[in-house]
Image (tube, rainbow, N blue to C red):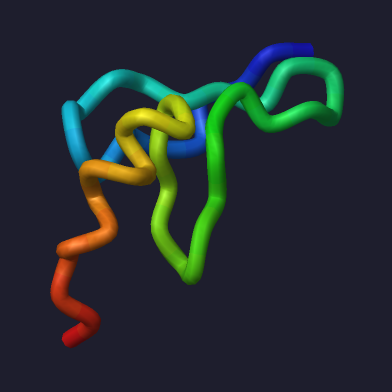
Length: 47
């Protein structure tokens, strides 16, 4: 089963859970599509 679980907070790409595996990176409460987006998104303010 494949289910969309959110969007990358850096680029907006759809993130999916594919048979129990996250197709992205969850880091410090934020969801990203790849390590590269996670690295570029490290400047997201924590409100």
